[in-house]
Length: 227
Image 1: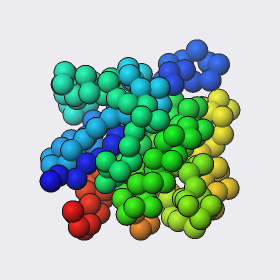
Image 2 (image 1 turned 120 degrees about the vertical axis):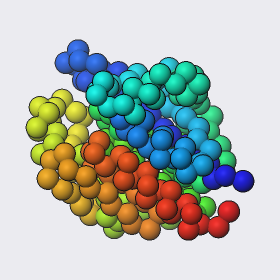
Image 3 (image 1 turned 135 degrees about the horizontal axis):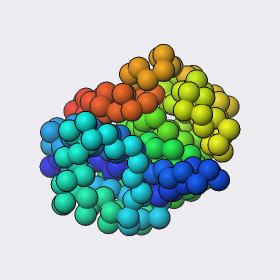
Image 4 (image 1 turned 90 degrees about the vertical axis):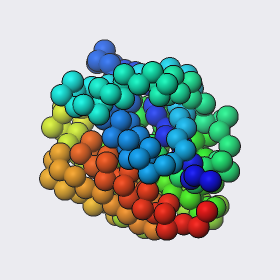
């Protein structure tokens, strides 16, 4: 029986009060999706509000992203995803939080998805996220009351990268700072360079360039885990 992974996205579509649109970052869906599919995983989708997912960051020179958006069955599945409260964590061997700036506004305080991530991790599954996706982890606590990220090495969108895109005064908090407040040990690379951190069954990546690497590490961990 194939291992099953849940890909989770934001439902938020505006960058603060700027009027600029945002959403789930397409390459951070497309690239991991292809890695998971090629590994034979059973892939399902979910989002904060369920249903149609706002999308951002399409680069028409990125053939994988273009193909992902042209794949009608996959898009139907993406836009028909469950809400966190409708997700049974016992169904999944892993969870992956895609990034996109929208994640900063709705994923941190989604108690349902925090519970799902905690449950998957506690029963031996893999929790993963990339870029702004680790925003979903800042309030995840384990059964012992500790934050999931406390004492663990993680990678996420850096303060320097946030300043480089001129959104450091727009996002509700700086992700790397918040993770550090929760006790995480940040591992970072120069802006826009790949950086993947693996600590036990927690896999995180710094930016879009890290999305494929995160997915590959998730697959490797799942292969190490008995069915």
